[in-house]
Structure formats: structure tokens, C-alpha cells
Length: 538
Figure 1 (cartoon, rainbow, N blue to C red):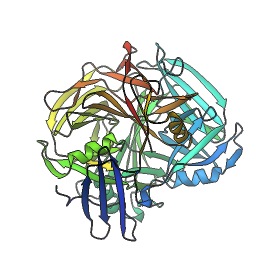
Figure 2: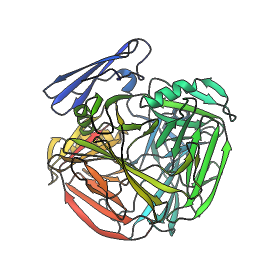
Figure 3: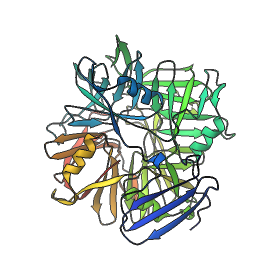
């Protein structure tokens, strides 16, 4: 197996790091020489122990501060949380006395001590593991001031379902993204360099690193769903579509009353391009751009697992390594040319991997959106097949589909993920314990699910929000478009017409799914399936 292209952008500067990936029925030990950028892979046909990762990529989630309803510090320090935010670190929070946890989509500094975060990926529920029949988005704005704003909008329609403004006790978690706490590059609003080197940023991106950008003027920070490097390697631009319009109220931030999606493209030229569209319909709320200083942070805890040509033939790495890493819960990034995306979900069938890439709106160039934007959704597979479908944002109108073949590089995260529980289709425990899962979640851990749908067919999703109900756990995953098995070796392809697929998976063995049509407040009948599930935390 060729390993010449395995690179170590994640290594500390003091020499050698090594780590062990936990792969079912195999231990893959990667010895990465930072100075020589050489790697050796050794396979052993036995169960592996817990991962032993390089310290720089083994940071754990930590409770940073617990804030009260009036914003008081019950324990820890809000200033420490601000410092984590300004260093580009990952942040999560919990509500309801440690019974509700969620990812965040963006964060902003409000004053010197408070931060506010958007958490958008939640669909209305009836009971702890049932969706409501008349579904709506449940957007949250949560602040260390204690303020919590919930804004509800129908799925597929621009219909306000009500607002709730409360104050809550909140627990805040953070995890360092890598051993580099300083930005790798800073630009002034003119695009002129202030710190670092844009070529180092571009090289990190092309070697799989994920990126966040910070506006130091207002403390707004976001990650990217897709990022691209210019042909000359001198510019980087990243896009993020998951932000809802907001306004500042005293010492905190709330959603606007008539909300819209606020998609953005940030580039090292200093330009931010913004495109605004009503939630639930194809109505533009304007498009503009501005220039601002930026600080760019990289998470370099990624390594090449597999690359192939447009025919799906291996050119580097190992398909077995990629498949094993996905089944072990590792996150994945894919690169086609100089375009890099982190998938919203993954699927394995017949030994091949497919990935849905959903966080992309149409662009004129790498720096700016089209005026009449559409979703640019793809399923990419290790067979080299790439399916692209295009639909107007907030509409069922199709803008064209295509099927192509591409050379693709697949990167895997090198952080430790641990399978703490496996439940059978009846909800019985076959590995680990539900108590261990709950303990890990209450410590701030993220959660990924490997759902055993059939022999050699696995659906892999991230929990967008998590609820604990006594001894049971339920996870919602909302970033999924209805698909089906592809022809031949192709694992998956989109179905027509497009429907959002929202799932709610519980440790009692039930997975409930609802399908809502893109651009319409119309759904298919809900379903309940019973699958074995691996519950993996990291």
C-alpha cells in the first residue's frame, strides 16, 4: 500500500508523535515522523485497545463555566470561555440540568465577558423520542448572560410558530482544537497580512485541516462547511450557510422577528460576501459584501486515509483504513481538486463509502454567491462517482442534476473516539453501558451513531442534539436528504423529489424518521425502525 502522501500537519514541533486508531478487528498504528513526513502502517488482526493518540490531538472536553439565570458565574469563569472562543476552540452547552445537549453553529462576543451562540439543528418533538406531526425548526440563541431565545419556524414554509424568551442555568464546555492556539494567518480588511502566512493556511487546508475564522472586531466566529484554495495558492475562501439573522439587545443577542438564513463566504482577501433568504421560502432578503479583519485558525488533527482516481482505483492509502475509521466513528473530510468539504453524513455499503455534502450554496466564483442561489448538494463515493443535484433554496424548483467521475482524497480525524455502548434492535445492551454513555455526554462529549441497517450497510450520522430521559438517550440528526441504494457498487444516490430526512434514535432500540419535502410544508408518513446502533463519543 503506498503511503508516500501521508503527511503530518498535526505534529508538534518537537519530533515524533504516534497514535493508534481503533478499527474493528484491526489495530492500525501510525508512526508519523514530523521532520521526515514519513509514515508506516502496521495491521494486526485483533481487537485494539483504547486509542493512544498524540497529546496534541487528544484534548478532552472540559466544563469551563456554569452560568445562572442572571448570568452569574456559579462555577468556573466566563472569561475563560471567552478565551477559548477567541482561540478558535470548539464550544458546546447543556440546558435542563444536564438533560439537553447540542452543537453550535456560530458564536459572538457580547461585551467583555459574555458570549452568545446559535444552535439551529433541532426539529420539534412530541415526547422525548417522537417528532411532532406538524414540524417546525426550533432555533436557539443561548448566552452566558442567562438569556435563551427560542424561535420556531415551520419546516418548508415561512410561518412563524412562536417565540419564547427565558433565562436559564447553562453549562458550557470547550475543547482545544489542536496544539496551535494562535491563528495561522491574520489579514487586515484590505487583505494585507497582519500575522502568519497564507501559504501555511492553504497548505493546511489542502492537507485536510478544518478551519474557523474570527472577526476580531466583534468576536464573531464560524467554521466552514466547504473551503477552497485558489489555483495560485495565495487565497483561501470558506462558506457557511447555517446562520439565522440576529440583533443585539443590551448585553445579549436574539433572533430577529422575521428571520432569514444569512449565508456567508469569508476570504483571505478581507472580503465577506453575504446572501440572505427567508427561512422556508425562495425570497431574497438581499446580498452584499463588506471588508473586515480576520483571524484564521486551523484544526490539523487530520490525516490522509485513502485517495483514488476518477475510476475509483486506489492511488494512496487504504480503503479498508477509511471504512474502519468511519465505522469507529471518526469524522471525515473529502477533497476534490482544491475544494474540501466535511460531510453531513456517511453511508457504507458493499465495502464502499458514500458521503452527503449538503452545506453548499451556488457561487459565481470562490469569493461570491450567485444572485439567485440554489442548493448544490452532492453524494460522493469511493467508487469515484459524484452525483450533484441543484434546487432553489426554499423551493422545490430543480436547477439541474449531473453525474460525474472524480479523483477524491479522503481524510480522517486523528482524535480519539470511543464506542461506549452498542444497543440491539430491541434496545438491549450488547456492549458497554447506557450509564457510561450518559456520563460521557454530561462531560460534554460529542456523539456519533453507526446504525447497522443491513448486512454490510451502515448509516453514520452525528447527533445534532441530545436528550437524556432517565436512563435512556435520544439523538436527533437533521442534516440528511432522502437517498437510496445506487446502481452497482455505488453505495447511495439521491431520491427524487428531495425530502429532508430527520431521525430520532434512542437507546431503547427505536429509530423514528420523518420526511419533509424541500420547499414545501408537506411530509411523508413517519416510520419507526429497530436497528442495532453503536454509540460513539469523542
